[in-house]
Length: 140
Image (cartoon, rainbow, N blue to C red; front, side, top):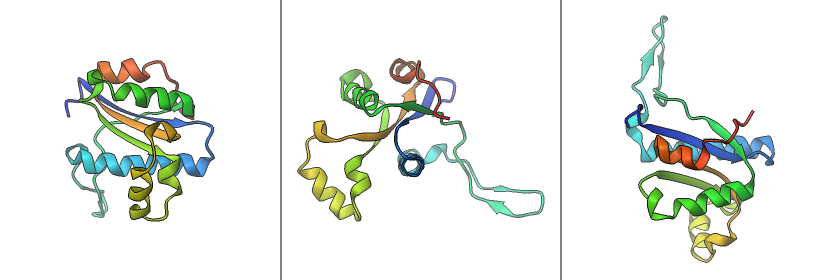
C-alpha cells in the first residue's frame, strides 16, 4: 500500500450502542488485516525485552455516519469507478448470527437492499476514498 496515495477509513453508524460500535470496528479491522496483511507491521520489542505483535502501519480514522449514509456509500461502491477499492461491510444480519454457517445461509436468501449496515471500511486511492467520505466528521 502506497501511504502517500492511499487511505483507509471506517464509517460507523453513530446511533448504535457503544458495544455494537466497538464490535463493528473490531470485526472490520480483523477482515482488513486478512485482506491486506502487508499493512500489518512487524512485531516490536520494548525496552524491557517484551515482544508485542505488529499493528497496522498507518492510521485508520473512524468516521461517524448514519445507517442511511452508510447505505448510500455502499451502493456507490458497487459502481465501476470504485471497484478497485478494498471494502468491508458489517450489517445487522451479520451481527445477529451465532455461527458463520448461519451467516452464509442467511446472506444467500437476503437481498442487499434489505441489509442495514452498521459500518463500512474502505481502503484504496486517497482521491476515491475522499470522494466518498472526505467531508465526514470523526466518530468521538
